[in-house]
Image (cartoon, rainbow, N blue to C red):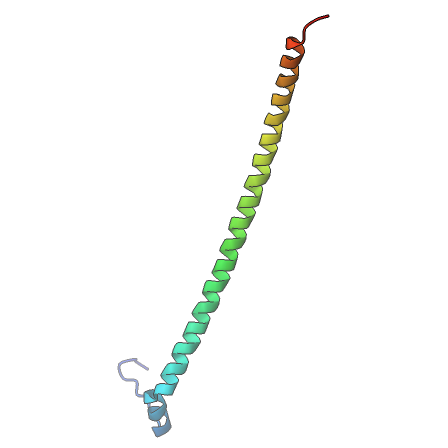
Length: 87
């Protein structure tokens, strides 16, 4: 059957339902709820990704800082040994 020659029969109840504003309001509300759920899920995933990235970044930075602190402590120990007067 061609789409151009297709006929649809709408009953009187269907016509009333089509023009009834309550169905339009219900449709908008359900669309809003679905959109809200999608946005909240997206925000949760984004927050999780940012949290994981920040945690890993902090772990790597702390490890690097601890290594630099150990090097500085060794250098300070060497300088403090040099500056001691020999008896």
